[in-house]
Every structure is written in C-alpha cells, then in structure tokens.
Image: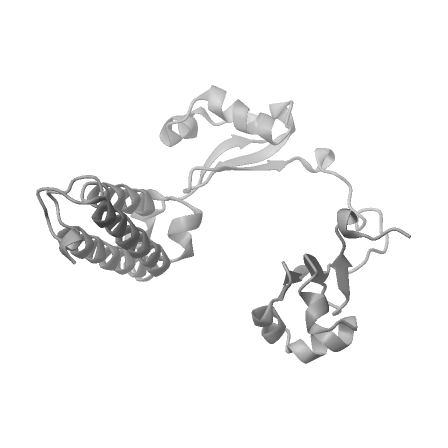
Length: 239
C-alpha cells in the first residue's frame, strides 16, 4: 500500500488506487453523517463540507501528502459532527445557535425590512423566490418565512389559494402511494419484505414467471397491492 503514504512520485496505478480509496472513504463518511448532511446544508453541515473537501482534496492531487493523516482527521471531524448534532438535540441554546428561529420576511402582504436585513438577503432575491412560486403580487402573500436552511416558505392568503375537493365538499379517492416493484428485470425484494410479501406472491399476483420478470423494464405497486406493468412501446409486437 505504498500509494497510501507520501511519495516523491506516484505511478498511474497508484493514483487510481488513491482515488478509489478516497472515494470509498467519502461514501462511508457521508453515510456515517446521515441523510441530513446530504439533503440540506445548514450552518454546521456547511462547515463540515468545507473542511472534509479541503482535507481530502490535497492528498488526492499531491503525491507528497499521504492519505492516512487526512483520513484520520476526517474521521475525527465526523465524530465531532455527530457529537454536535447530538448536543443540539439535548441543549436548546446550542440548537438555537446552529439553527436560529425562522424570520418573517412578508406578513399580510407587507415586507418586514428589519428581518430582511437580519437574513442578509436583498429585496431582489425575495421577489425572485416569489416569482419561482408563481406569485405575481406580493399583496397576495399571507406569510413568507426565511428558514434556517436558507429557503423561503411562502403561504398565500386563503382568497388566492387553489380550490380543493374538500372546499367544494366533493368526494375524492384516498391517497395511494405507488412504488416500483420491478425495475430493469429485477424484483425489489426489499420492498416486498416491507409490505409483507415475497417473490412467490409477486409471481402469483402477476401471473408471470421468473424469465418473464427479467424482460420487464418497470412494474409498479400501489397501497392496495395492485400491480401495473409499464410496457415499452418499442417492445410491443404488432400483429
């Protein structure tokens, strides 16, 4: 594992091995930090992303630097991140330091200039976010809130909200969650296990054989266990 330590020069194969090890280690690090750090960058997440990216970038591009020290440092930072996340759940004041309270930017159609300044955003940015939500008149906004994650939550006045079946007192079908059960010729055994089924049930339900499943690109299942096979038009044989 000479590629792991600092060298005067590395061969092409050693560079490849160093890149593979660094990539796998980053996958492990991201998994260890959890979905929150991946899905949204808040204050603490942003700091961690900068540190880890900077620490691992150098040994992956400089042969005179070894991977061992960078990986140890990264692992310690991950442990600190997990500790800080846990501490923010237990200590209210620390949580408020990392994730401050939301700021009201617009209330009943009026811009709250004081909170605009606290959020360090411009009026142009606020109107840009309103346009993304198809809001053409700020007076129609009941509430716009600057979230700790850096996004704006917008709530329209009830007079400008779209009608729903419940508003019209109409009956509507219950919500049904549709998920892929067969993808690229493979049955999702983990999903089958979650819904209390198995492969034998899938074969019986669809009337397919194992070889038939391998020819299916996509099949979905809803909450009532109804399975719909999506056929590729190009594969349909015409008489």
